[in-house]
Image (tube, rainbow, N blue to C red; front, side, top):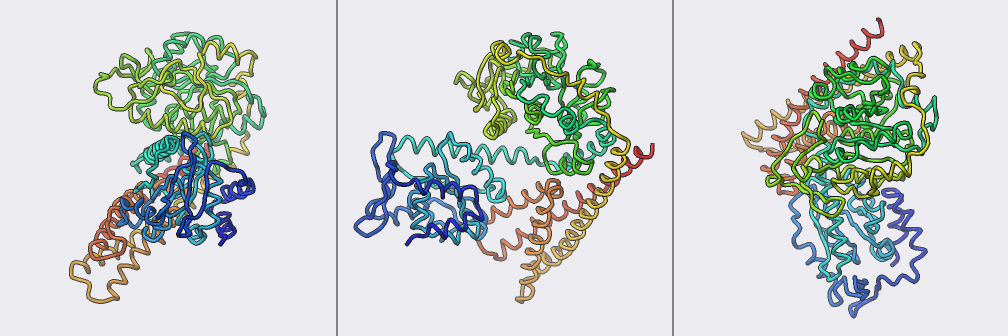
Length: 630
């Protein structure tokens, strides 16, 4: 029976881009010689696939493919109710059939298949339409060099971030170097992405609140100053297809910093604040200095007591400490990061502009150059690794260290294939950079002349890069920014709008605080009831109802509001992680008790941080009102 239409119908709803690709490739199936599907003596489908030698080898057992499917998943722990099982290679789906019979109610299967034509063929004789419809199974397809492959995997992982707390893998045991390489690279990507996702997620709600407070402190200045979108509106594509050089503060900057003078006025020189001392020593004035950290130490290290040339434009998202913009008496370029609260603030003050900021100031400047249309984007001083003597940053950097290389535990691949000493954080920066490079159509040149290999970039020396791309004069960023005027009418309108939206945000916080308080009261009663002993079905149902209330009326509703989600997500992920460790797929007395204990901790913190957030927003409203009335 042909199930292709049914499968594709559900895929068009759940994974429409993939459905379109499969539909396209299905029409080209004739003549594909990479695989062969035929029936064995029991009338069961069997798969042969070309290995690294070009030989067709059996991926599925000729004698008993169903038994093989069962054997492939024997190592899987099915005790988890919420899990993510990654199958690298679809084969003919026998292992998927067995997994779908056994996985927990909230578990998902992610199938990663290199050959989209094989996937299309399997969807003809395997009916996964119900599993697709219920969001139990997802597909990602493509060879390692295909950007769609990793973008599809990361999209699924982001959307099902609760599930990736617990992940297991199913692979084929075959002698095929190509498949084994594919498996290793996909598994490496998934593990790195998971690790980096939780790294970026953070674990400090107070840090998120500090970012909100900083934005409110900066809002009056950011409303009154030209925004990124004002610049683009006024000057259009002034920097489109013009080179930009991102100047980071890695130790390799010592080698080639002097060449930057040749690029002045012919490329946008965007400097990380950590590289400013070195630039000043070499009499190089960048077009902009960037900052992204929200803590006071950044101000103390790079700005306090410092004088900046009037031609340098501060380019920092509003999340930084107010003291940093206050260091600059002239106009700054205002914009916001590209995350939930930053987007909320940007919309609230009528769209100054959002910039992808990654996880570092260099990545923020990369995002800014990208928004301005710059091409190529050139990286210098972007080592993401220690020097051969264990030095972390360029000579004049205010913040640097020298470590004993014998104690280093993290290594990254260098531009020449060597292993370089690094740190956990730099390794995460590297992964984030490579994700960004997969998503861009710009030419990215790594002219660091050392340090980590950033996959997706072109390795060149800074000298030859400047000679090739920095030939024409470009308009001064300072002059462009200075020429933009912000009207008093806009200032008043934006100020009143953020006050109005802040009051709405407070009401949402109060709602979740109230719901958490109600749930805590019921939680206390349920815990007492469990100590006494559950004697009636009604008592048990009340506990079930409470757990359902927390999930549906609090957790799911929080995730429906991007800003509230960003603030409280760590509390929820922490709870999800603890609950995922429960080794029962259905509720019993032990699992109910753990659920209630975990929920109590989460709900208590939701109340606490909702109260803190309300106070931050109330103070923020007062700040905007006071500045509006000046």
